[in-house]
Every structure is written in structure tokens, then in C-alpha cells.
Image 1 (cartoon, rainbow, N blue to C red):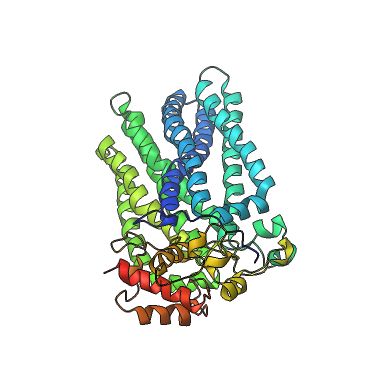
Image 2 (image 1 turned 90 degrees about the vertical axis):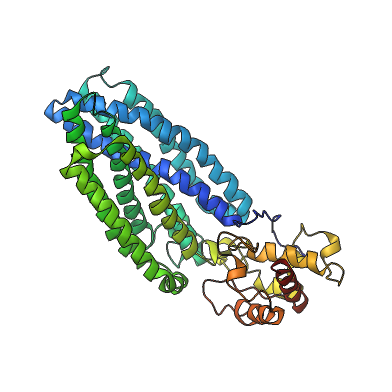
Length: 446
């Protein structure tokens, strides 16, 4: 019997596999998005400093740049490989799909990124050491490199939600995978958020300059408040466009989540609008402790819910609407020579077609049923759900009746086995594998 190209299961207790990647990614986004937003902001400040002969703005840019070097380019460069590590462990086939579809796009993005890293060092180091016009050109190229990096990465990330065009499944073309209805609203949504984040950091830098230069600190706090409001409302505008470009499966899930999303976004919008208004009209009230706290608020209340929502809305797929989150290929992609594996799993069972399953578990017996059920649950469910009784994210124990084995088996057969819920993968298993999963879940959650 031919084996499927499945990898060993990476299971992270309590949190679930995908959420470890999500947490790492959210932290990285805070650093990386700040760098792109700051690059755009630096271009604006350098232009203003050059046109108005404002040497004091270069002092601010240098302080911001030194903060950025550590905050974004050191911490960001540490967490970036962390995403690769966790994503490869959690979703090896998903990462493989991205590399095989976008290898040259990613190579190009790395060229932009190398220039970006060199550019930020040069930008900070050469302040006051080269003529201002040359420094302005350097700042412009740094901003272009940062936005270029963003644009290329967004095309890849958007493919994880939905291929750029339906033609992709027939052609397998990278351009069909990259360009689509979801890519550009996603990019502008993130640019707006980046601008807002860079301004929040900018308010923090300005607040640290109060003793050194109070008038400049007040002026820049006001300006950053205006920039932040612009970025925030740009984010809201493009978020509405972005929502309208999501696939049907996402809209089904979104209909259940939307009331809570709207309420949380309204609260967050109110908090940040009040903070930015304070920065504009009462800049002297902004202290370092308050400014630092708002950075934390962005991470906890802004970034994490947003990244978690995006991770949720692309279910049941992890990439390209053809690889399920549990790594099983759920549809044909003729342009890539890819065949659906759903029927193979239905015919033979997951235990028999997975190469890393121990031989002792390939046939379920009364003696190994619990062990086989645990392995099957981890293979089929753990990339989206926590399997532990007190799990943190989407715990199965709170979604299904864990004290009723018959109800569990019926649900798996009638819902998951038929694909009737769009945001759940269609997985058809032999009766003994359904029974083993249900037996282990009931035992696990006693």
C-alpha cells in the first residue's frame, strides 16, 4: 500500500499546535510591522526635515532609529526564524506548499529584506555625516525596500487564505496564486495598521525626549497622534474591504464571530481614539509609562485578536484552499499535479497510510484502542484544537459532549465525514478509527 506524504505529528499540550505558531507570529508581527511603518514615517520626517531645514527632527529620527534597531531588527530577526521553526513543525506540508509556489518570490523578498537591514543601519549612522539630500534619498529607498518586503510577503500570506485566482488550480501559476481579490485589501489593511503602530512607538520616543527638548517632544507627540488616527481609520476602512474578499467558508465562521468582533473593535477604537486625541490636544499628559502601556495594549488587544481571527478564518485549510490544517490534501490541483487524499484515507484509514505510525498501531485492537485513538486525535484534530480537558484554545472538551461516545461518533460521521460544516475538514475514516478517537476523548476528559 502506498503511503501518503504525511509528517510526524508535532503536538503542543494545552495550547494546540497551530496556536504556538500563532503566538510566535503575533510577537514577530509587532516587531516587523513597526519596522515597515517606521520606514514610511522616516521618509515623511526626512522630507520635512530637508524641506524645512529642521535639524531637530534628525535628532528624533536618530533616537527612533536606535530604538528600531533593537526593537524591530534584533528582536524581529530572532522571532522571524521562530516562525519558520514553529510553522515547519506544526504545518510542514503548508510550508512546503508556500515554498514550492513562491520560491522566487521569497528569494526576491530576501533581497529587499537584506537591503532593508543594511538601510536602517546606514540611515541611523549617516545622520549628520552626509549631506541631507543624499540622506533623504537613502530614506526613500529604505521605505521602498520595506514596503516591497511587505507586498511580497502579503501575496504569500494571502495565498494561505485563498489563491489569488480560481485559475490557479488549473494552471498552478505563481502569478495566479499571488494576485487576487484578497491580496491588495490585505496589504493596505496592514499598511494602515503599520502606520498606526509606528506612530504609537513614535509617541513613546517623543515622551522620552520631554526633559531634553520639551517643545519638540510636544510637537512630535501631536504629529504622531494625527498619524496614528490616520493609520487607525485606514485600518478600519480596509478591514471592511478585506472581509468582503474572504472565501465562503470564512464567511460562515465569520457570521458566528462577527458580533463579538464588532464589539471588541469598537471598544479598541474608542480606547485608541481617546489616547490619540490626548496626544494631539494634551501632549504634556503623555508620559513614558502610558506610552509604553499602549504598546502592550496593541499587542494584547489589537494584534493577537487580529492574527487569531485570520488564523481561524482560513480554516479548514492551511494553504491554498487545498491543504487541510491537519496536513491532508483536500482537493485536486491539476496545475501542480496534486491529487486529493480524502478518498485514500476513507478507503484505508489514517493509521495505515501514515508512514510514521508505529506498526503496533496500524491495526486497532481492544488492547491498543486508547493509544490508537490518542494518535488519531492528534493527527486529525490537534492542529486546530486543544485536546486537553482544560486546553486554552478551541478545546474539544467545550465544543462536544465528551461524556457521550455515541454522540461523538455520530458527529464525526455525519458532520466531519460529510464536510457539511465548511470550516471543518472533510475526513472520512473507517468505523474502527472513529470509535478509537471517541473512546480516547471520553477517557481523556473524565
